[in-house]
Image 1 (tube, rainbow, N blue to C red):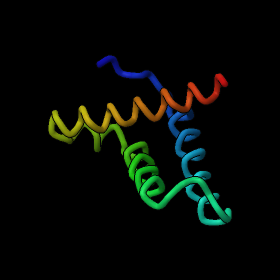
Image 2: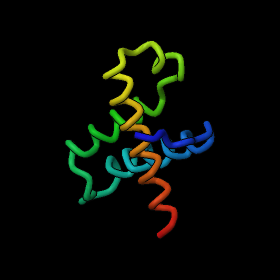
Image 3: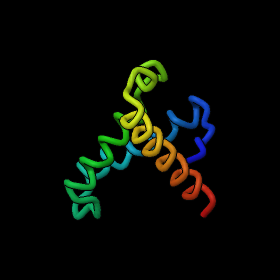
Length: 83
């Protein structure tokens, strides 16, 4: 799988948007995000927050999974920006 090129600013923007979803789920009555979805978003935020050094220290399989999740999150944000 080809890596998605992202600068730190784009990763931070993705984290900010996901944190916004988490925060709005706590304050909005009838929020469409269920608890399982929110827990998944929190995991994605943690993965996006990993440093390059932390990712580099992972085993190959684990690193591939983390990079795949990061790439998917960034691609979804880019797609959301186009609509």
